[in-house]
Length: 399
Ligand code: PLP
Image (cartoon, rainbow, N blue to C red; front, top):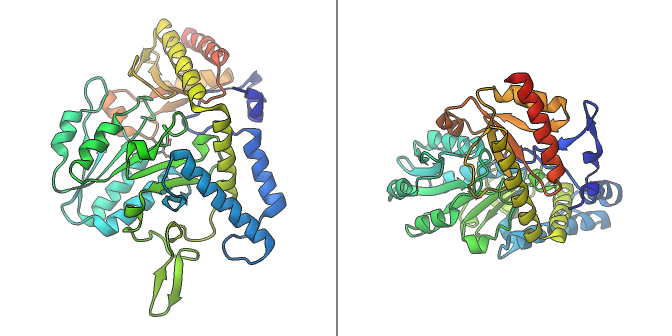
């Protein structure tokens, strides 16, 4: 892994070299992605799909090339199944609205899990309020794993959709999504996978998973902010109405009414983020140049190394020993996570503290929050050592 590809990692914070361990919130960008953004604006910036002129055609082919790259990256059957959005939250809101319009009626049920990010809770709550439907959640067991037996009991003829995180953004634990998908499909219920925390850390193959929808954000995947993906199986996307109206998503507009464009354009109202999609493609190419095998092995080693050290200094590590994807949550005795985070920051170490936008899970854990360390492919053991050293100093001051 080449740290030198990521210019921001040369920055100093409070006079110390930066140790960036907040990758679950957003990842840093390699030079290739930064160059792509400059290239787009300095060489072929032009609105896409509409222009007959050269620049517009170049921009269009870059955007559509990026769509194909994303389709290949997650092994979608066709680029038409890739809808570009602003990010995971935007994808989930789009799906909740659109799926809700077509398929949710009074008394219907939607299932999420007890460890979701708010982005995979609130859009469904809003939908349920609008349609007088019911949001259920898969309860957690004492070890914070999903209670699959209870999930089986939740599935019934009123269940219209299941939407679960592939990897918990708080605990880093990899969820049994294959089983959830299989059990749901046995009853003909579609499943949406929130891949915000899995797609940046492991090979996610929609054909192998057989999920009906997959959502993720570019900015957590070494790509730019403001671009994300809503993947949907063609047979589902075709049945869903657009969630937004405007340019691009139409076929014809008459005063009598409007007909909608074909897939995926009917879900992309307005000028798409064609610079973002191109830069996202460069991020994907960067990941692929390293390869998933190497990335997964590297991040697994780092996670295990860090977890062991955290335990050695007496911290409580949540879901310790579970299979994780680059995220560790811990607490230092009863010290408030915010105080730990602040002292780490003063030593140049960036971590996240608080509820991590997953209040129901944090409530269940019975803590005010956690300190979260999350790795990217550029982190190394030296980063962990610097973090642990800083943590020990914080410990001396706070305990
Ligand atoms: N879902 C999960 C599991 C996340 O971790 C996050 C962000 O942390 C989101 C959804 C929301 O992502 P975004 O803010 O990029 O829309």
